[in-house]
Image (cartoon, rainbow over all chains, first blue to last red; front, side, top):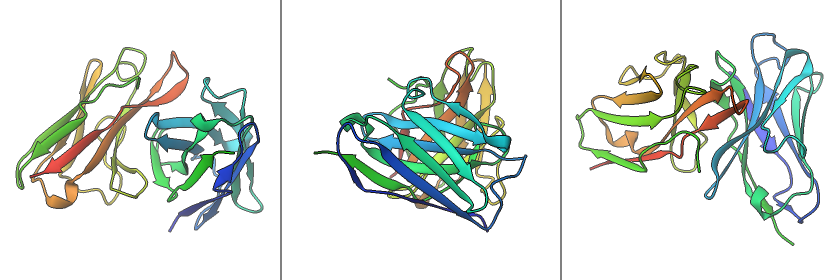
Length: 120
Length: 110
């Protein structure tokens, strides 16, 4: 059974870089049939798609975040990574990683999420 | 302001059928398939419906998605207490080149 688990620092200082990891078990992350995404959720902004990495390392980012975000995959470790640079309080959210179920926008498998707070 | 518009709340009694709406535009719901998610308190969203009206394996047939023009709907039949949750619609927006979500509808089972 596919299992996703996010991990990373719970607290990041303003202007610093946020780095999160998603560890996948029970399945491959290099299948041509699926893509892997990062989504965040906050009371102010609701659910917000950050970006997706597809087979061959092809990435798509939310235009509102594209200049601060990088998503990568390490297939040998079965891990996905998310970095967000120059964070502000607006980046405080629960961050989720997810895998598509069928189409690009159908996120069928989610990790439990990890809370990230940006504060000095 | 979310790109997709949902009513903030909905309610129903056990056994009843309720419908949650989601309004978009030609660049998202009107031009693409859409999805519905259920989020229980303290949990990650769960995919209920995709490709307009398909259900993932294991999702009850009490949940059904539909669409017309630039609007989408999620119908829940035989309402149960465990259906009390937040429900979100989502779609790819080709103008914004992003997956966009609705603001969510909190369903209360009275």
